[in-house]
Length: 259
Ligand code: DGL
Image (cartoon, rainbow, N blue to C red; front, side, top):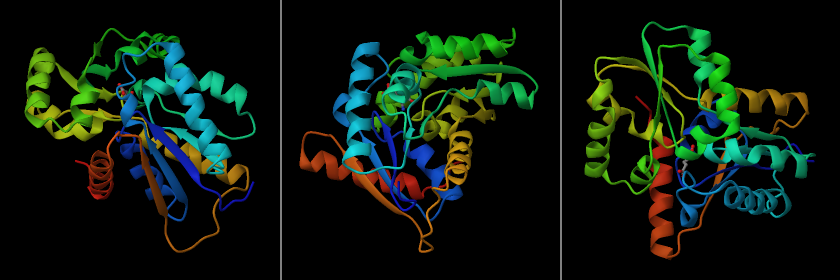
């Protein structure tokens, strides 16, 4: 495998841009290909079989057509359901998975109550249950956010505010720590703060990027380019116009600094 091969990332849409942002900060001279599976968005309510089969198609394409040297599953739901079978099948390529950053809360031991937000698929998964019970303490609540990733994906601002008011309102003044257990959710940090006030956010994007860097170093796969990164964006929306809009928003979000 050439060290100048690409790094492949994928998500059910553009939410995984929050992972790519961190990867580019740590590894600024790599070539990336980001696959946004808009046509199948959202993944959160799909069956295990559907997700495993779709992820298999995507990873097969990223490895065998795009020649990727490593894969990041930039989606908590797909990570929870498909990483095991993907690693078994594509054992010669490093495949990195993201998970809700509950361990990070445990390690940092912040004061106050923690709210974990994630999709139904993530919360019901065995992988998440293991994580949750490994670090559980009574100052934690789980919130299954059905439909939230979709509102962020579709950029429906007013519906997003209404959703957050309805579902997060009860945690105002209670939750001080919020685990953003879906890669779309960091894109709504401002709107979450508008409901909850000033909270500490935890997400897995830095952790997975740090792990990627370590794995590339270990396997002698770091790019030797010195002229910055390249990013190839692929989206599966049906129309050309929708694909162009996704691309434009993706690169705008990539450049935006997070709060
Ligand atoms: N970004 C995906 C995640 O991290 C969104 C899931 C969905 O499409 O429902 O879980």
